[in-house]
Amino acid sequence: MILVIDFGSQYNQLIARRIREHRVYCQIEPPWIQIDDIRAMAPEGIILSGGPASIYENGSPKVDEAIFDLGIPVLGICYGLHYMANALGGEVRQAEKREYGLAQLDIEHATGIFKGMQSPTRCWMSHGDIIEALPKGFRSIGSTANTRMAAIENATQGFYGLQFHPEVSHTAKGKKMLSNFLFEVCGCKRTWTMKSFVKHAVEEIRSEVGDRRVILGLSGGVDSSVTALVLHEAIGKNLICIFVDNGLLRKGEAGEVQSVFREHFKLNLRFVRARRRFLTNLKGVEDPEKKRKIIGRTFIEAFEEEAAKLKDVGFLGQGTLYPDIIESQSAFGGPSVVIKSHHNVGGLPKKMRLKLIEPLKHLFKDEVRRLGKELGLPEDLIWRHPFPGPGLAIRIIGKVTQARLSVLRKADGILLEEIRAAGLYEKLWQSFAVLLPLKSVGIMGDQRTYEDIVAIRAVTSKDAMTADWARLPHAVLGKISNRMINEVRGVNRVVYDISSKPPSTIEWE
Image 1 (cartoon, one colour):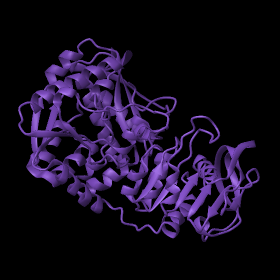
Image 2 (cartoon, one colour):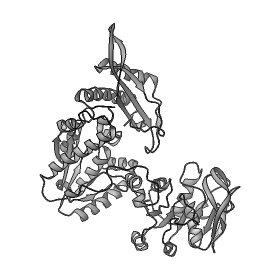
Image 3 (cartoon, helix red, strand yellow):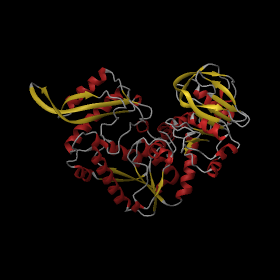
Image 4 (tube, helix red, strand yellow):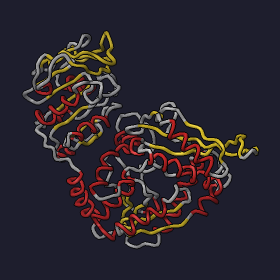
């Protein structure tokens, strides 16, 4: 495995993803990780990430300098380079000219991290500091017009430093550089597969859980579905899945969950019918944050009531993913800027007195999908578009009623049918319908109508951090609109959302 020390770079997740693309396991930890913990991890190499600080500033993040005495290779990127140079006796100062964006890198020595590479090559810079003097034993192996020492090495000890970011796609040979570090310098093996992950996860779960029981809130989304299958593989009937039907689901979802998990996979599934409770609690509520809180609180109440009927339960399973942890807790409390909080992260209701078990907490979404395939999850669930916890309630702008849910559920069903029929479903990150709190005038059968407006939202994305509106074919949009207006009573107008994220969000509420 490779250990990444989080110095606050916005690209930390990308570093981890790039390493895992080479089938090498990677884990991100904060700079205050204890050296004994690092030794226990036994990494083949360490990567020191970039970050917004300057090494000479008070309070700049630092990791235990004993990492340089472990006898394993270290790669410093941007701030990580500056930290390494400073810690080993070099000198770092503010640059006279800052360097951001594309730059031409002249490779002076095609060895180590640059093995097999031709000069010049394109790289992506983002810095305002430079190395003034190298530590003992180092030499410069690459430069740009503005940065004399853009890449350095101490090949004897396996220490390398890059002023630019090899993990971003703008650095033309970045993947090759990381590959060289992993295999030429660190001697890693390509052993990170979903099959190996399952074996390791099952052993860990059995060791931790023993004969106790685990409860899991199963939604039918890919994260909770794969979590359920991993836990089931490890402990069988000692996993109890609780599905809460909140009445806010898409067309046919409740039945599909029961069919797949109870009948096909033979999971121990308890079905809680709570539609009336959710709708009663949401009556008259328009504010989206109030909706979310009411739905979250109602879900916990329904879940706890069902869980209270069970005995010998010691754990709560959750489908938390690695980006959830990094975004919510800044890499476990690291110096990265918090992007968003996440409902899966941050503990349990105190009265439940259960330990948390999160078998997917070190995986990214694409890895979870590969894991689902390894475990035999049906393709339509593996590639299911993300669906928010509050469900259709936050895709109804304004008050949530049974009648409005019925309209949206039918419109959304038509949208998904046509997206799939056009072969577009797996090309999109998300596609869904939104019911607006507006009515418009129309004409049907020579009569005036005054009915609802449905908005269509379809986006492309790799990780939901940014997203662009999908350029759906006009013929597909036309068919969707025609079917919605003809088949969904109460709708007389359909519009298409052409906003990107940022500045808009993917969901409307």
